Length: 96
Image (cartoon, rainbow, N blue to C red):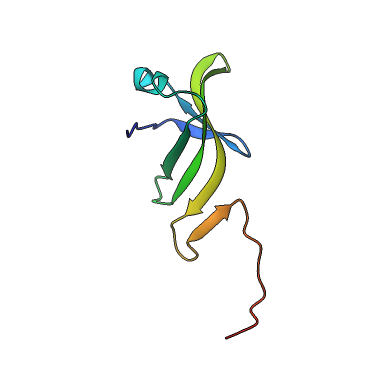
C-alpha cells in the first residue's frame, strides 16, 4: 500500500515524524511494529529511501502524528549512491 505523507520531518536522529491529518484512516490500519519503507524527496529533487519500524500514531506537540523508527537509509543520488545509515565501515583496498 502506498500512502503519501507530504508533511514529514525528522523527530530526532533516528525517527521520522509525519502528519496523520491526511490519510489518517489508512494510517490507523497499519499495526504498530510493522516494517515500513519511505521515500523522501526535497523540492531540489534530492531523495533518500529509508526503512524502519512503524511506531503507530502518537501525540507530538498535541497533534496526532505517525512515527517511524529508522534503521536503514539509502542515498540514491550522485555522486555517491549507496547505504548511508547505519554507516558502513571503510575497508582498505588491498587488491586492484
